[in-house]
Length: 208
Image (cartoon, rainbow, N blue to C red; front, side, top):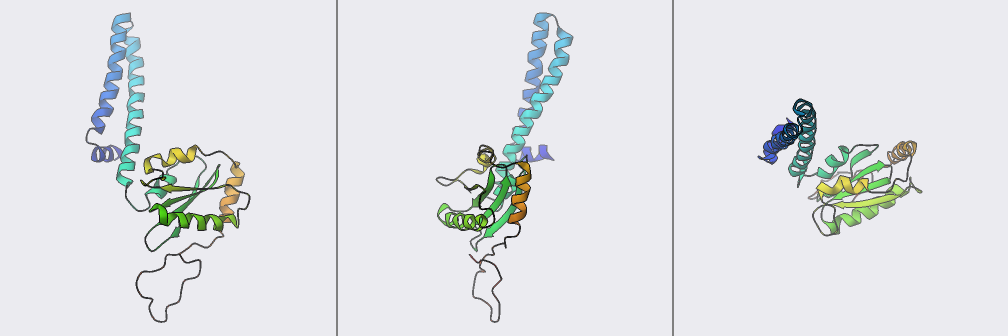
């Protein structure tokens, strides 16, 4: 299935994987012929070539994931949820009627708010959401990241790397505690488009 995804995103992807493994094995065969240790180096070459092929396969799979997610609503949330390590992700903690969103991730750095949408609009959302989370996590560092292709934003393909570079401020037990406290916050709701129906009540919670 992953191979099909790679092939769809990059038709040359799987040939590159095979070529990298074969080229690695060929190098070991040549070294074996030169040194006279043919069988020993062939066995070693098979193991190394398989490792090289898997590494290239993993890199292409990640690039294919980014390619398929690019421009899709909620792409940043999908990337956050695929991160390794002690990250607890809550998608769509804030949403507007223009479908600008803010996702929340809690990890060793603290609280990370990641937005999707045009910079001018999401900046106001990030500021408001930062104030909201600080009500229940006063002493916890809060970072805000704009994910996108605009000026000052972090591209989707570099989002994971950007978050992994943040300093480690919390211990493992503190991460779970902070996430538990944040669950008490009411989720913000988008303002519906169009006229309000007669007799309809506004939903509880903070409206953006």
